[in-house]
Image (tube, rainbow, N blue to C red):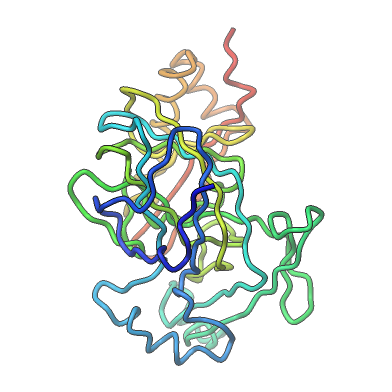
Length: 317
């Protein structure tokens, strides 16, 4: 199986560069992903090392190293790239961290520790599979929660602009930190360059909605991926095809605007691809108790949201 080794997975922008891997449609491949700190953080004593890292001090800062670009044979501009996440296996240790002023509550005088650089080490123990794919998170020997590995940064090379892996977010992908980008999910992305030029990285062993403090449970990981192409297909923004549901995704500057746009995108998806009548689609997003608005990311200057509907409602026969 072809793979991008960790030492070759240190890209910091989504850009139309020379591919490091070329794959056929349906071919599984592996990316050995570095953690979000690019390996700088090893212990809770690495605060000074983190703060003074040359990567952090660069302009723009370099975080969330990526593996790629991956060239998928048959993908052309105007097509849709479907990226299937087959496996995410994180290493035995991860970290959660934050810095001063990362959220509106960081300066609350009740919790002064929120306003200083902090690193928390999280241990990952194997689960029933014998791997961390279904493992558990521990801190200081105490069980925290079950792991749910996910990919924080994903996307294809944009048509014109170049986005950084730290701050870039667009319909081509970026640093979106969507907890549903996990095993079993297929990411759907528009193609703007021959081969798609796919990038993946910034794996989280677990994350809640919003990643509020600015960091999740970041970890090194091994990703197993496969891709397919839908010819001559365009979508308004990113879509997720999960095992039991579909999710339309939007990301932008304001939560209010993104909620309205993502509902519009889901209605369009239901009508265009599944034959649901506009009236029935509008009813689903208003009256169906299984319809969800997921606030995946809501930090300073970014709102990433998803409109989700279970697949059981897509059969209109």
